[in-house]
Every structure is written in structure tokens, then in C-alpha cells.
Image (tube, rainbow, N blue to C red):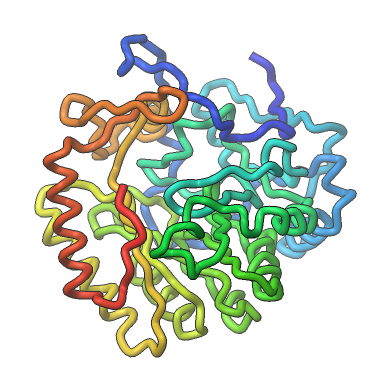
Length: 393
């Protein structure tokens, strides 16, 4: 096994997940439990190691990121190429621990500059970073990793934002649906990372908000987060063209399975703060889990949301409802990272589905899905009548 990581390659390529024992092939798993901290209140992540590829120095935003990082007392190591060494440890656990604490300032690969639709969320997906310092035990990114999860932030932000103009008016996912046509062409910017986990290091999403605020066209920037550090976004000239969604869940999930993220109450306080500043806001309720007493737990969540948005003038609130699912590849990685997790990964209680590229995923059976969906749609309509449900999946 090579001792270097190719930082020019994407962290999560758009390809089928790797085979796993769930598909009939036995694989070796590793105890990587030491990678994740216990669930606790979020604090700003400071990587133990920061590196920059040579090309990152050719971009103004790359230099801005380096300046921000150095102002926090961190040293930036200039690499001689796109290859990063020193990540591979004596064990898989050590390798992942090193990767999870490393930040790489790189130039986005060409594949990330050609935008793809991202159904059902938005017309287009674009990336300002890949990788996340949080430790969610159900992490969807886990099953897509092409190597150790070194977080990559993109130095060529200015070029990325400038390249979005050619996609305006060409969307088919949301901008051609009657219920969402008013949003204009939508751009999702948080598929492979959590923006607020990295914003203090990069400033990338603040610049994106300002870019969309100055873009005189029917467009919308969208991103979602499990963090609450929104102070830098209050007062920006956003022109209502950025919808920030807070990823929320019931307390048994947020308190036990989302290590290193903000408390639910703090996320909802951030939601209120943004809404009062005129942002369109949203709830990403995900992943919805059919836990024991799930109606009670999710009822308490919705009550907390009601309190958080009470009295907000001109509230523009949406909800995206996403049930828990897993792939063979994500199960392998997650059980390696969190071998004592209470996350339900039992294939025998799920329905087996085939997604893009024929990849296997396990979802709740049809009866359970129907019951969950009916409850959420009814309860949201009763408790938060102003909230628009964008989709269920």
C-alpha cells in the first residue's frame, strides 16, 4: 500500500460503493473507534496538520485561506506536489485518525468543475470543499471514500463561483417544478462537507453568500449544517438568495450519534438568528430513524422548532425529510469507525434497493416508510403550517 495520498483526486468519487459482506463477499473490518470523540458540544475544529499543494499558491483565495489558518497559530506546510505523505499509519485506525485531523488546501479537480444535478435537493451541485471533521455515526460520506478522509478545501473559489453563471437557467430538478420554480436555478454547496465546520478556516461560504447576493438573476445558493457558528453570516448582503438549512434530529440521535457537532438547541438558535436576518431557512430532518417511541422523540423536536421560529416576521421555512439508509460500503466503514454504535444496520429488517450504477442500499420497508411519512407530513402541517415540505425520501 502506497504511503501517499493523491490530493488531486476527489475524496468521494461518483462511483459504486465497494463490495461488502452484505452483498455476499467477506471483507476485513477494522476497529477505528478511537477516531471519533464522544458526542459533546461543538467547538471550532483546528486541524493538527495543514498542507497546501503548489497550485494552491497561485489562487488568491488559497492565499486567503493560508492567512486565516496562520492567524490561528497553525503552520501551513507547502508540498512539493499533489502527493501527501505521512498519512498512512501502522494500522487502519491510525491512518484514519491522522487523515481526520489533516486539512489540505488544494485546487478543485476538473471533475468537480463540471456540475451535476443533485436530485431532489437542487438543480446543480458544486463543491467548495470535501471532507468533514464531525463524527456522525451514520455518515453518508463514509461509504464513498476513495482513501483516507483528508479534508480538502478549494483554493480556486473565485473560478468556481465565476463558472456557475453558465448553469443559470439550465436546471431541471427544482426550477422546472411548479412548487419550487420561484427559487430560480438552485445550487447546492454542502454535499460532501459541512460548511460551518470549516468556515472559520476558509471564509469560502461567506464569499459564496455575497456572490449570490450580488448576482442579479433568479438563483439560489443552498447549504446545510449541523453547527451553529453563524455570526459571520448575519449582516451579509445576501439579498434572500441563500437558503441555510439546519440539519436536525431528535435528541436520541443528536446526543448520541453526532460527535463534535452543535447541540440541537444551539442549531435551532442559529436557525432563528438567520431567519431574523432575512435569510430563507430550512430544516433538513435527517436521517429520520424508526426508533422506539419515535413519535414522542420527533414530536419533541418539532415542538422545539415551533418555539425557535415563533414570532419571526416574514418567515420563509422549508423542510426536507430524509429517512435513514445505508449501503454495504458505508456499513463496513461505519462499523470499523464505531464498532459499539447503536445505529441500526441490520439488513434483515430493511428493503434492498438498487440505486445509481446498480449500487445496493438498504431502506426501511414500505409499511414503515408510509407510517413515517404520514406522521411527519401531518404533524408539520399542524404544528408548522407555514413550513413547506420540499421532498420526502
